[in-house]
View 1 (spheres, rainbow, N blue to C red):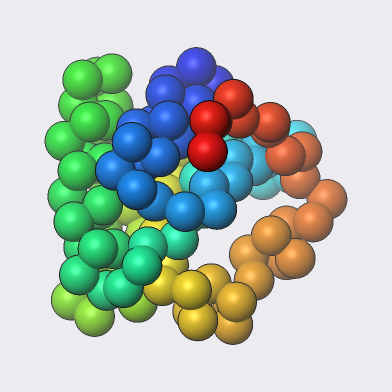
View 2 (view 1 turned 180 degrees about the horizontal axis):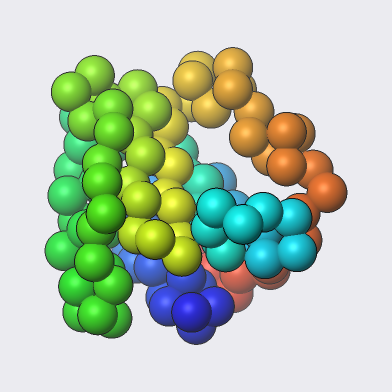
Length: 114
């Protein structure tokens, strides 16, 4: 699953998502194994990223359990069971600061060239 999470991060990068973070929650939560947190330039970009990541996940035989927030596009959550993807506009990401809330989770270094 870790390889799939990393692949999805790289895919988001290819779609111009910004400031992509992968958190390993396996030792911290029973809800999910990984959080992917990424920023979009605006709500339209966020909605596009959400559509794209759902399609890409199917290539790894990962199915979408649910999607929340797509209507507004400021914070979109895509639940892929073992991976939860959070796509934020910059202001919302700063406001909710998930990295601060989950500061004790292991951050996985991504080999993303930018």
